[in-house]
Image (cartoon, rainbow over all chains, first blue to last red; front, side, top):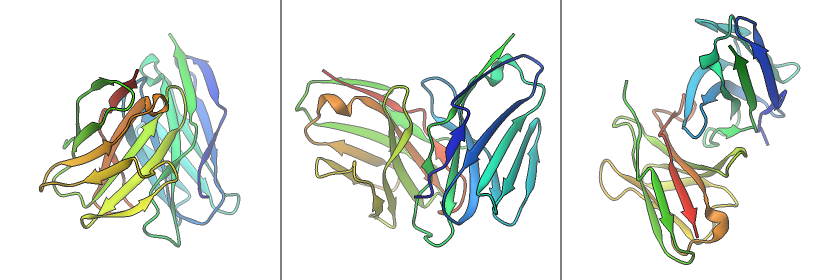
Length: 113
Length: 113
């Protein structure tokens, strides 16, 4: 399975600090995506990084991808209380174009004001 | 920004009853998905749909589940005989291509009593 597994399961930080979440996966991928979910709501796409990319930025988000280690990290800089949510990684399989995204259990981020 | 719309937002049903969850994907998207999330747990893939047929389904998607795209806009998930363990948030999603970002709806909270 190419299912991503996030680490840590839960993270609590003070507003203004940086938050780092990690994701590991098992198979070869063509892309890795990060999503955010506010409590009881749908998932919102944050960023997509392709297998031939090593780093990508979007606003306060920075994603890295290490295909040799089959891992990715999501960094949120200067966190805000509004960043409190669950964050999920999901991977797209390299060899099976029909395989849908499979999500891990997520990291629950709490940003304390 | 285009949205995926799901109705109803909350449905309560008696065990053994049939329910139909409705979704309106983004109009130019080609791939459609149903996921579910039992409270506090991971987001689980149910089924993907492309070109008017199921392209992949998970072990969860057994004979009591069915999907349909009855017209050019709606995408429905039917559960024929609901069980208590079907209680969950059900999310619809769509994407332009398989490898692209998914857009999720806000979900239907199904409660089976």
